[in-house]
Structures are given as C-alpha cells and as structure tokens.
Length: 134
Image (cartoon, rainbow, N blue to C red; front, side, top):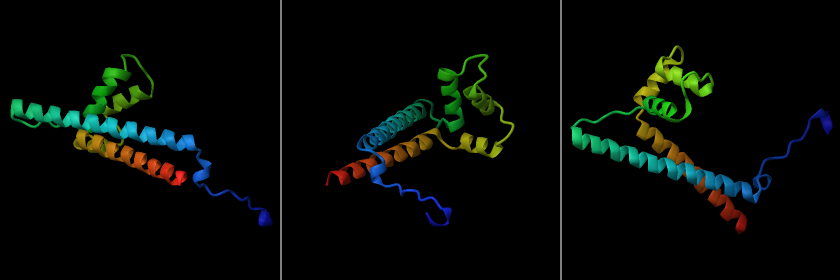
C-alpha cells in the first residue's frame, strides 16, 4: 500500500447479510407499529378526557417518561442510570433547555415521530430485501 495508507472496504449491501436486513426490517416494524398503536391509544384517551371533562389535558414527554420510569424501572433506593434520569426529570440541575422542551413537546407527537422513524426503517429494509431478490 503506497504511502502507508490502509484501504478500508466500502460498506455495501453485501456486508449486511440477508438475515440482518430481515432483523432490521422486523425491528422497524415492531417499533413503528408499536409506537403507532401507543400514539393512537394516547390520543383516544386524551379525546375521551376532553369529552368527559371539557378541557384538553396536556401530557408532555417529560411527564410520560416520569410515569413510565416510576411504573416499571425505578424503585426506591435505586442508583442506576434510570434512577439518575428520573431524578433529573423531577428536578433538573443542568440541560434546562432540553428539560423545558420535553415538558412542552406533546407525548403523542413524540410517539408519532418515533413511529414514522420505525416505519421508515421497515420500508427501507424491505426495499433492500426486494432489491436483493431481483
């Protein structure tokens, strides 16, 4: 190799095996459609509350993350990464702009964005799989 430079092969479709594309496609489908169902459930629950109470209840990403962390992942006395995230959600010391954004951003919109991203991964991988079959 002249000049002491190493050559690195270009990454192409062949580097990812057939099963890798199938795995990424399935992962994209699970993420995309799972978050789409979560988005629809959340919007229906908010509309139901609006019809019952007469006032739209805002649910931000920060509130949703806090509720899920308390429900499933963090218990009293925990000191792991999830406990640190929960503590930051409760009383932020730094990254105040991000915390404000997570409070203002509707959880339903965030779920929809994750759903679209998952579906894009699903469609992209399906196209690669179809391209390889030709």
